[in-house]
Image (cartoon, rainbow, N blue to C red; front, side, top):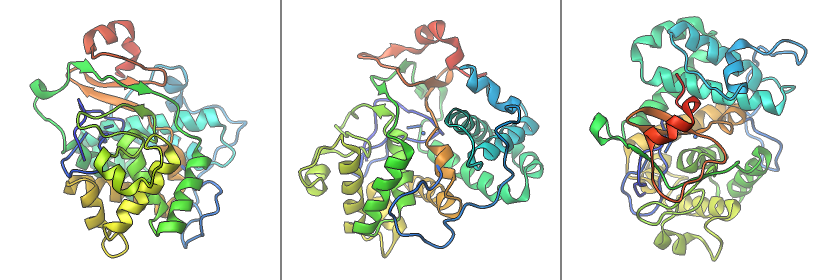
Length: 330
């Protein structure tokens, strides 16, 4: 795993690269129909649902308006999470609403992950069925955040040389994970969690300082071993290669050890495992995760890099925010 030029935070995750064992930074749905073999627990946990005829929850309105906002209290954080979960777990929700819900829950979890004093208050306000999900999402984000600089002077004052694009459709990705699971015995949820952490499901197009590339961030030497002549930038080829790598590293015997070989960081192992196990117990969580956005941690805070962001040279954060103040959610 290799360190990218700077720290990105979509969920306070880290864009990395598999291969050499050193930690790296990024930020980043329901089990859609696929040919993957069903497993016990794949039915979504029952959740309150919303009727398409009902008004859109006010908590989703800022994202829908293109001006995302962070919750400013524990009570508002709980409301963000509840509103987002209702949409994500409603099979009749439109794609636009699911996208807003995924981004909204991300903002809530990001904010809560940096405010441990809110934990008990938020947990007391969400339904009992959501408490473990909230705890595990926040624990994952805190684990990933621990991999990155903490001193203000060490944070980026420039934005990265990246392109941010729309990810592959959720159902197509789910089918690819399912194929890899059948062929190589790697649980689809773990492949999804790695894909999410590495490049936010392929939203981030960029090469690390060590040359890691593609949606699963392979360095050339590792790709030569597991890529089987494929294209490192092709989602299916990269997912299959990641599955081959995990299998070779003993995933069937010891998931944690295999993940550690993907990135030599116990925090990475913890975060990936937590996200994967959330998807295992609540497959529709993938539906929301697929809509998490790219946020880049800077001295000004976590800056939203939406689809269409593209820079061929490092861009000063202050200059970018002068043009796009709405991309630093308040």
